[in-house]
Image (cartoon, rainbow, N blue to C red):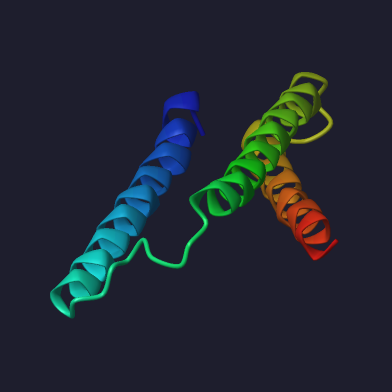
Length: 106
């Protein structure tokens, strides 16, 4: 599997997920506005944005670590290239959500 194929396998679904998330969030806000409800009311933007920033920060840092370890495994022929990248991204992505859960719980 070439590097271009691997990039397409990772990037295209990621972009589609982001677009789907933005579209559904926007549609949800429009429905609330049509009902006469202020969608921003009751949310502490600073608290909400801090949680999102923490979650995103932990996620992207762990994904970068996963890519580095996947690259190390692929270069040293420990695992096949595509398997090492995908498995490390999934492993560290999952760990990031667990770490975020533990931080939010406390």
